[in-house]
Amino acid sequence: MVFKDINEQDLDIWEPSEEEWKYLVHFLALSRRNISVPVRSKDADVIYGPVSQQSWSVSAGELMQRTFVSYRSCERLASALRAIIFVENE
Image (cartoon, rainbow, N blue to C red):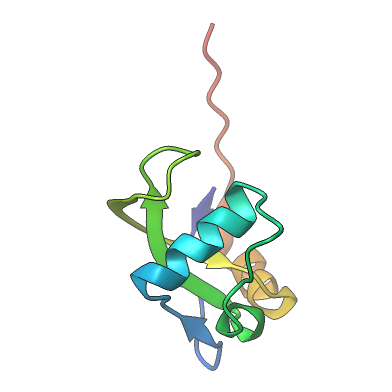
């Protein structure tokens, strides 16, 4: 997907600490339901954080990602969508 000029003005953007990020990875990616999610994650529209090195790992990679987690932020993301590119391998 290709996006242009995503308007993040007045959106609640959260950059979790390393410890908060690890809780998010355990809760969301690893389905650990017995771990409590940081309260701040429930109010955020957008979460900025590192991409996991591997899907099962909690160690952070060097690349950063933006995750649009609220309906309001997804509307903004949708309005900035310019193209969808499909790549097929034969």
